[in-house]
Length: 253
Ligand SMILES: C[S@@+](CC[C@H](N)C(=O)[O-])C[C@H]1O[C@@H](n2cnc3c(N)ncnc32)[C@H](O)[C@@H]1O
Image (cartoon, rainbow, N blue to C red):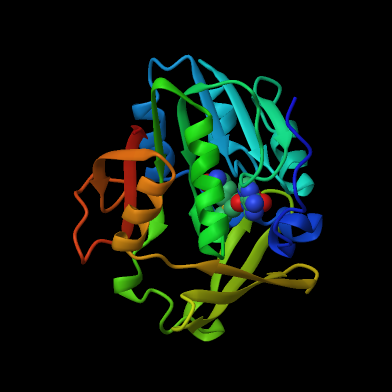
C-alpha cells in the first residue's frame, strides 16, 4: 500500500469531474502512447505516474502488471470504468511522495505530467519517485515541452478554438489561453469547453513549468538517474534545439 501522500496539486482541470470528462475527447491516443507501447513490449511490470484517465495504462494492462498513479479522483474514476480498466491497479496518490514498495521494468510519465511540478524541489521529488520504483534493469521515459520553441506564444481563445466530437455530449468547442512568466518559467493557462447542444460552458485554470535541457540534466543526475537516449519528439527523432519535446529515456545511475 502507498504511504499517505502530501496534498496533491490542486488543479481543477483534473480534479473537477465536470472538467475531467472532457479530457479524453481533447487528448486522443497519439505518438506518445504508440512509443510507450512499443518500448514496453515484453515488460512484465509498468508504473504509469500521473496516469490520468488511464487510456495508456489500460492498454498496457492487457499484457503486463500495471499500476496507474494519479492524485485526481475524477480522472481515476474515468480510468476504472474504461474498457480494460479492471486490469491495472489504480492508486490515488501524488508522484512527489508515493512509495509503492515495489519496483518496475518501466516507469512512464506521459502527457507532460513532469510539467505540473512547479518548483525545483517538487521536480526533484518526482524524479526521486521514479528512481525509487525502477528495478535494476528498469527504464523510465517522460516528456517536457522544449522552452526554446516558445510554444505558448499566440495561444488566445481565437487562435486555439476547435470543434471536436465528445462521445456522450456530441459536438463541443474547446479553446485555451496562456500567459508565460519569463522569470519562473511558469505558464498559467485556461482550458475552456462549450457543449454546442446545450450551451453549457466550463473552464479551468492550471499552471505548468518549462524546464531547459540543461536544468533537466542537473535534476536527473541529482535524483540518481542516468539518461541513455534523449529524444526530441515521440517519433524518436533525436533531441535538437528545434525539436518540440525534451524526452529522456534512462535508468537508475
Ligand atoms: C495532462 S494529464 C496526463 C495524463 C496521462 N498521463 C496522459 O498522458 O493522458 C496530467 C495528469 O497529471 C496529474 N497530476 C497532477 N499533479 C500530479 C502529481 N502531483 N502527481 C501525479 N500526477 C499528477 C493530473 O491529475 C493529470 O491526470
